[in-house]
Amino acid sequence: MTFNKIKILIGILILPVFTWGQVTNIKGSAPGAERRTIHLMVPGDLITFWEKDLAESSIDSIGQFSLQLALKTPVYASLNIDFHRVDIFLEPGKTYTIKCNPMNYKLITEVNPLMQSQNIEVEFVNSDSEDLNVLITKFNVLYNNFILQNFNDLYRDRNKAKLDTFRRQVVTSFPERKNGYFASYIHYKIAGLEQLAQAFSKPQLAKKYFMESPILYENVEYMDFFNQYFAKHLTATSRVLKFTDYTSILNTAGSYQNMMKVLDKDTILRKPQFRELVMLKGLMEMFSMSGYNQESVLSLMRTISTDSKFMENREVALDMILFLTRLRAGTPAPGFKLQARDGKMISSTDFKGKPLLLNFWTTYCQRCLTEMDMMKPLYEKYKDKMNFVSISADNQFQKMLYFINMKTDFTWQFLYIGDQWQLLKDYDVRSYPLFVLIDEKGNICKYPAELPDAGLGESIDKLLSP
Image (cartoon, rainbow, N blue to C red; front, side, top):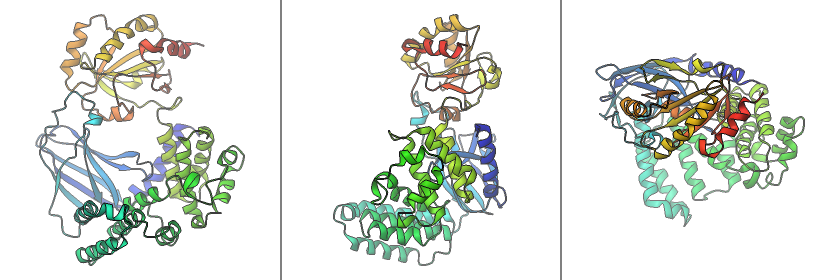
């Protein structure tokens, strides 16, 4: 299945969740973020946590914004301004008025903002005591205080009486739990405490929290407990499954049927839908483990993404495929539209038809400047055969401009990231400089590519060779 087909399928699968529901409105103010963009992000699933942009709005000149989307179920989401965020819970058909505390969004020190993001402090205006955000905030304060005071008693001493104390506190603080999402949130938060204190055996926990309960794909605490419980379940923690030769299963025809048959030996995985989800969790772990062929793992994920009887598992499988293959050779390179040194907006599509060497840099990164000096002879050698683009992640356009005006021999294309910080996330830029080779069709050829002084020329030769 091609990448584009996968993207189309994801759109089809997400539409029922986020389009055929009740309209949810979010409005508010963000002082200091005037004329910036606010994004509403949700994790496509709560195993990969790979975020998707559901809605966005320009923040006007007086700091006001408005967002609208349709929901069928409550969702865990985040509001993002540049690299700053706040996590929130949204319910179908509700209107939220949010007041963000003032921040200086222009004050970005000379570090990678991926490492410098801050939480946006917000107030929910006119929210009632039954609002999901109010309930969860109140519960989390109770939970965090309890953990702070009793962690050693639970983890080291296995003091089960402390769990009863906490349950009584919860009943006292929340005698009625009308909100189903919130009731499940508490239920699975306590499950995590029971696992921490080893109050029950693993089979007992599974029976109590999984075997006789529906799968709550959208509930962040259900899925958090699921992820903890089934971490390395297939390969290490299940007494029944840990000695299974998954390699031979993955490398043979009918791997899906064979895997489902093998996993059925574990009595806690008897429900096909649940068993398939645990299989996906295990496959994602195997992808990064030595001894497993990544293409075989992806092949089985693709089978689930197209043939599963369970729509939710199809969506999880598709998310996993995209999450694990992003920036791999052959996948579409993330696009961009950025300001050039002359003020014109340049798009990534402008470079299709020729291979592209892309690099991310800043003026305060000495290694970046050294590598660009080494990049110059590569540009002179290959400039007729491919495009060269350097994207500045400085906090001011003038810094980039001042530098390249001094370096008059740097004549390739320079672009400024501006407020398009999402691009650093898209390319997973964790340090500078970062080089990426992209082929003439706009697909990733090599990520990350070598530095100019460490073999980049050889990779370019290989890319350009017939």
